[in-house]
Image (cartoon, rainbow, N blue to C red; front, side):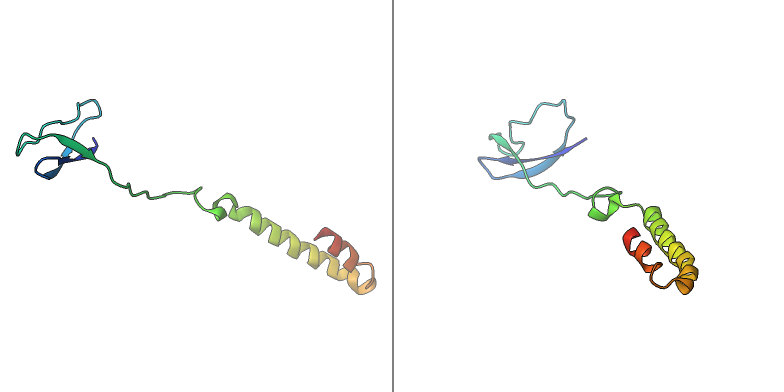
Length: 96
């Protein structure tokens, strides 16, 4: 149940009360029988969980797969690079 804050327009009495959504708003001050008004204030927002930050859409498994594929391709091209020094760097540059 939400907590509502009220202020009296006559005596400046301020208080909070827990009410259901379906309950009617209070209109009479309990201290002086004056008119009440609801007081609205900023609500604190806390972002918990994933999906709120720019880096959350990138999975860590895909970045590790890319790095392992890159290291595997550079390892496999190192052997042909010894026999053909000019031909081996060109495919590696095109793949990157």
